[in-house]
Amino acid sequence: MRTEFLLLAIYNKPRLNIDETCQVLGMSTATGYTHRSLGRFPVVMSGSPLTADIRDVAEALDELREQGKAASTQRMVIPPFLERAKSRG
Image 1 (cartoon, rainbow, N blue to C red):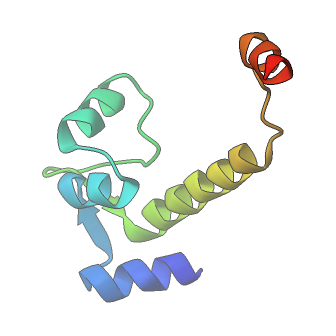
Image 2 (cartoon, rainbow, N blue to C red):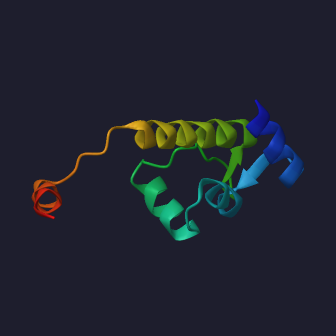
């Protein structure tokens, strides 16, 4: 919920265009269009020009944050060649 209010405070409107949505999600607009055409864009865009509901953008941003937190807490596996070098020296 805080993410939604933060985005509303920054953009001061309930819908974001594709440029703004991509900026929030940390990708270029070209990448956004590519992901959208492949069906992998994390937010539903509609209308002409393309816009997204700020609640959906906030939810996607929160999901990306959770994925990042989960990935950072996973145990790091040391490749075998580094393990051998460590034991030699």
